[in-house]
Amino acid sequence: MTKSLFLTNLILAIIWVMATGTLTEENFVFGFLISFVILWIITFKKEERKYFTVIPKLIGFLLFLLWEIIKANFQSMRESFLPKSKLEPAIVKFPLDAKSDLEISFLANIVSITPGTLIMDVSDDKKVIYIHVMNMSDKEEFIKEIKQKFEKPLLELMR
Image (cartoon, rainbow, N blue to C red; front, side, top):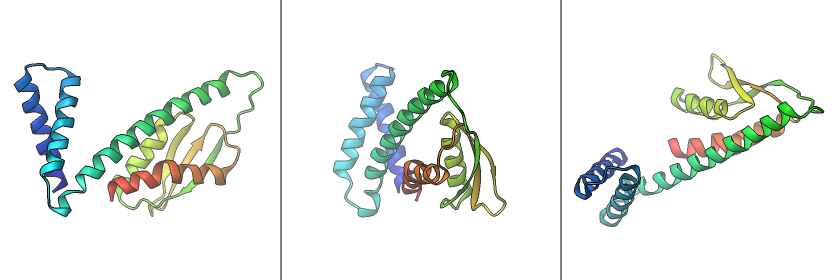
C-alpha cells in the first residue's frame, strides 16, 4: 500500500505542476507536499498510514547523511593538509545487523560516500563488511558510531 500512496503522491504532484503551468523543481516539491498533506488527511486505513511516517524519516535521514558527508569532508581535508597530522589507516571488521542484499548494499554505499572510509569486501556469509578507514583512533568507537548513525536508522527505514 505504501508504494501506491507514493505513486499517487507523485501523480498528484505532476498534476499540480501541469495545472499551475510552472515547471520548476520548487513547484514540483510544493505540489508533492500539498498532495502529501491531502493524502494524509483522507487516508483512514491503519496499514496505509505507515507511508506518512516513512517519508519524513527518509527526508530526515537524507539531510542527516548530507550533514555527515559535509563534516567528513572537512575532517578529511584537515587531516590531509595539516603538517603535523599523523594518519593511522586501519581495516575494520564491521559486524552487520543488515541481512538482505539490498540492506547491505545501501549501508555499504552510505559508508563509502563519507570521506575517509571505503568498503573493501563483504564476507561470504554476509555477516561482516571490511571497511578501510583513513584515520582510526578507536575501532570499537568507530563500529558503535557506524551502527548508531547509519545502520540503525537505515534498517528502521527499510523494515
